[in-house]
Length: 180
Image (cartoon, rainbow, N blue to C red; front, side):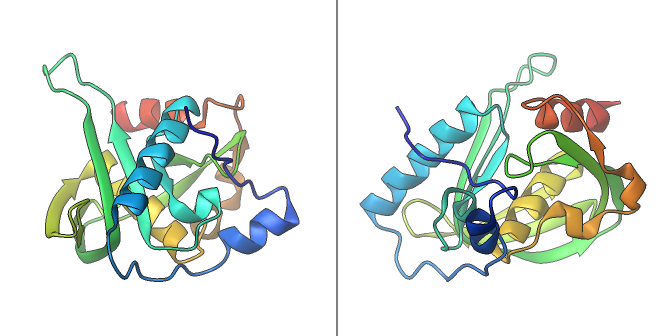
């Protein structure tokens, strides 16, 4: 069971961490991999699809992402744990709603690349590349922004799009919008 706390913007000491740039991971260690697993558990418990290390108070460049099972297309859940992720290429544009575990109870409209290529290290410290489109590309861009101290509210297409939703339903509203 995970005992990690997700930092939220409503607490000044948390906001300072969330607004800080993370340091590069020097070496992927078993201890770091175990911590990333705890982040995954914390994210699942909070009904999220992504969580970056700064969101749990660690200013290092790593993140976890998990897309739910796609029963319609008979696809299993996809889980990513990436260290030092960077967007290598991005093209096209998509505009959609985003929510964030660190900004509970709100969603807003953000413009992102439609397609990206992310390079990173996996949990064995080996280089990997992922080509992502649509919603997965949006999630990765959002989480990588966290590593640079950037929140989705910094990128709203229109401040009027920032709206309340039931706390805990941010990611569901985001995914529903992406699928419609």
